[in-house]
Image (cartoon, rainbow, N blue to C red; front, side, top):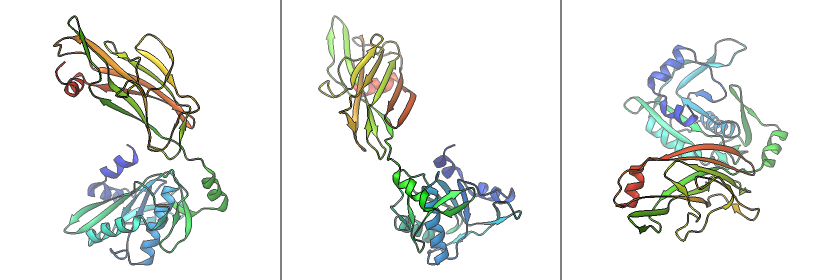
Amino acid sequence: MNLAEIFESIDEARISDFVATQHEEHLLLDFKTISRSDLSASDDRRNLAKALSGFANSSGGLIVWGVIARKARADGPDCASGLEPISDLSTFISRLNEFTGSFVRPAVEGVRHRAITIAPNSGFAITMVPESEAAPHMAMGGEGRYYKRSGSSFYPMEHFDIADMFGRRRRPRLDIDITIAPRGSSRSGGVVEHPRPIAIYVVNNGRGSARNLFASLRVSARYTISASGPGPDGRGGLTKLSSDGNRQVSFGGDSQLVIHPGMRQGIAAVGFSCSAGQTTLPDLEMLLELAADDVPLSITTHTIRWETILSALGTL
């Protein structure tokens, strides 16, 4: 499971099990108790700020609030050793949401908090802090320092750590967006041609710009890669580099093509032909390879059910 899935899966039974097994804190997991549910205690505020900074500057992690952690042995990490449920849980969650943006600079995107209620307005809380692409982040809330997570503890970062993070290049993150819409169908001799109803785009959801984009697309039988682009006017695709028929094509973007953060760029369009009135075709299976500067090659498969295509296009 990834961090978000673990965050969603933790419940009262899992927290009790942490204590029963003396579960150790580790790189991605920290246990904390609080003094006041409104986070007015300085130690509580510093704990939140250090965790936001330390996890965001490292590999991300989870904080389980309401669990006592102590060392099981002198030279070992802290372990879950008892439960201290939070009273006025709703206020605590409200304060976590309120202070998350102000207890670390710059703010960390994607932080989530969740309550685990075991009695009326009482229980535990889970905080998920993702690894940040905008690191380093400074802990505020009375701290004013940069932290990192190492082993089971948060440590102030050294000057060279901070300098290294400031020097890191912001990287792009490329995701695939597939849309289906009628685009220029034609009918001839009882055959209906849909040359490009399935449009494939790449979206840059990272913080750096993507350059020198490469994509290779292969589609299953009964489908073809269009000679036109995915845009409504048949444009907007990448330049074709090579092809093996019309079911496997490689594309590339020249050095002038830059996909800035938040931008979408067309790759290609996929189409098919069928008999007039035909209601069944195989599902579309696509194998897509994608890479760019600072983006390692990824190979993904995408399946689009025929019923989904038919529903988007209406009666053929």
